[in-house]
Length: 228
Image 1 (tube, rainbow, N blue to C red):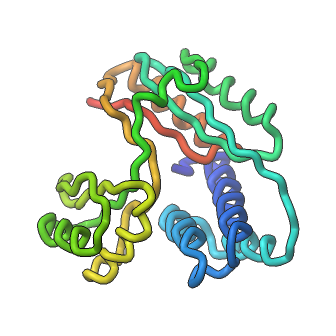
Image 2 (cartoon, rainbow, N blue to C red; image 1 turned 30 degrees about the horizontal axis):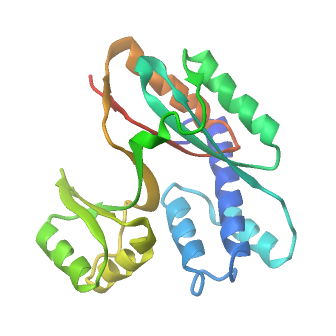
C-alpha cells in the first residue's frame, strides 16, 4: 500500500474519512469507542501519521458534518478474477467513474450488484506472529467466541471468527497475552481462488495499484492468488 505519492495521499484520505465516521458514530475517545480504537490501530499499522489521525478526531469533536456515502462495486479483472471495491465518498458519481476507469484501463469490467459477492464470506479476521494455535483456540473458546477457524500460516496465526465477535475475540486474545496484531478487521474472504501468473498477474497488480490511488476507495477484496 501507498507505494506512490498518489497512493499515500489516498491512504491518508481513506484513513481520515474512516476515523471521522467512527468517531462520529460514538464517543470520539478510543478508550470508550471500540470501533474507533480498531480503526486507529488499523491505520497506525499502515503508517498513517499522528497528525492525520488527530485532525480527523478533532473534526468529529468539533461537530463538523460531512456527508459520506458508502458504495460497493463488483466486477472482474484480468484472468477473470472477482473483485469487490468498497468506497466512501462525498461524490458518488466521481467514485463510480474513478473505479470504472481503473477496471477499463487494465482489461477488466464492472458487473452488477451481487455478481461476485456471492462467492465471498464476510469474516472477522485477526492475524499475528505466533505458533501456539492450540493456546489461541482455547482462549477464544473459553471466551465464548464464535470461532470459524484458527490456523498457522508460516509465522502467523490466522484467526477467523464471526464478524459480530471480532472485538470480543480481540479482547480475549489481549487477556491471553497477545497484543500485537498484523490484522484485526472485518473483511471479505473468497470461497475459492484463481491462480494468476505472468502477464495476467502483472496486469492485475497494476489494477490494484490504480485502485490504491483512488481517494474514494476504502477497501478492495479479490480472489486472486499470484504465483511466480
